[in-house]
Length: 203
Ligand SMILES: C[S@@+](CC[C@H](N)C(=O)[O-])C[C@H]1O[C@@H](n2cnc3c(N)ncnc32)[C@H](O)[C@@H]1O
Image 1 (cartoon, rainbow, N blue to C red):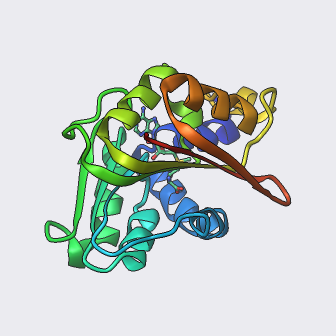
Image 2: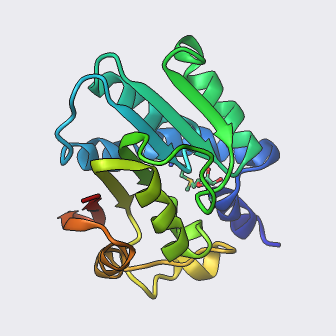
């Protein structure tokens, strides 16, 4: 595998030294997209929130800061991501922040547990996206919101050739899938150059 391909494939499932380097890098370079995307959420105090594909845990920290007295859960398929997210959230770990290994396909949480679920730069890697969206719907409270943030916004993006296991979607495709999964009041927000936030609400 070429070095570049190996580097980017560590976005899909960070592993080893290269994975750790990617997690550090992603914590920094996904900050502008995440901070912008979260502006579309009207945060309330005391929320219970989940970040799926939490990577190095920077989004967990951001969520915690936006809602006083909140509890924030992170889940990621990669052991390396889980370790980094725990380290980055060390002070609040086990008190307000809870991180575990697992997949979006089968979320180890009770029905109706979350006020907000986020997914930053990760849905490209989820298998069976309709099934994953059904899982997100299940774990949301009634009125709870699911915010997907992406920087790759074209269904035929060249990134899919560079990164093993990656499938890119347009915001409209993601919105359609949200509606088909049963979400309502969907919204698409865009910002140059290629930022998009797609939001769905549970009835
Ligand atoms: C490009 S990174 C983004 C990480 C983080 N959200 C951020 O913005 O920096 C994608 C993350 O999604 C995780 N991931 C991939 N497939 C997943 C799945 N099926 N369920 C949960 N996490 C997954 C990867 O392990 C990786 O940590």
